[in-house]
Length: 364
Image (cartoon, rainbow, N blue to C red; front, side):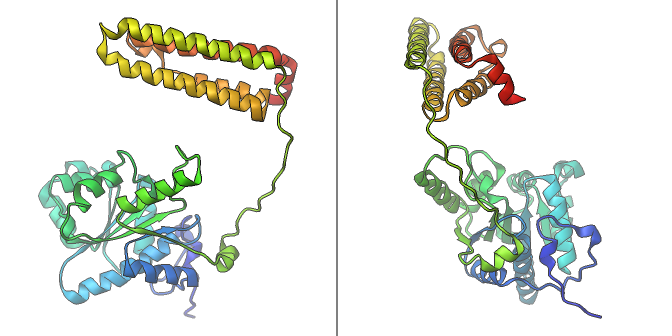
């Protein structure tokens, strides 16, 4: 019996070993069909939760574009980028199962870093889809073993990583944005915003805009979640409200303020005394002073709004991030010690206001 099955059960968790799935027997959900149609019209960043079937949409694109390539008679490549070897393996298997195309997988452990131009030419001739880590693709482009003009579709898994010095960013800056024959882009992510550095709606909007510009794409997500909720139910939110934490003593805050002023002044003095001898240390001192000021602000925020225990934990987190003075030069190490002395002193003072038996009870 020829039975049509829902291939989304395989997507994202990719339980491939238990599937005897035919490449022709999949039925996309309606929101996947809509996203596919949008992605065919323009470069798209698909924002869908894990398990919602992003990879199936990518496969629909691959099959449609691959068919068009074969009809035209012009050899073009489809590149699928995944940020880890584990994901490369998963996506490689998924594409092989869901298509009749020739698919290859490439990552450092396979020795591709040592491949010659002839080795890559053989793969380019043989394969329709190349699944690889972004670093491998970046290296191949830099060595001119492959030109972006020969690529018609570039799928970028976990595309939110395209920030900073990530290989995704380098591929886009060094090659895509300079290319005369740009491939179609399809990015996939569960969240387009990296939490680090986000503290407001404006920050989120800025990160989304930067990602869209970097990937030359527009974000698309599902507005009507009715169908998706059947397959990927959202977690139910429960709000609990607490009274604002009470400051145990106004003296505590005053002591922390005084400690910060003392150590900030010490860092300033140290910076001034060394400026004439070590001009390159100036920026490092400023950075440490900024870290001291940030730590001071975070601790006071916790005291005002979250209570003693959270303030105590915040100091411990700050201490974990203090630079290792043994690995630094003597001059910079002295500045780092001032930062550590401040945190040690604050931890000790807050601990005195919070009885030890209470701390033990909280962490039991």
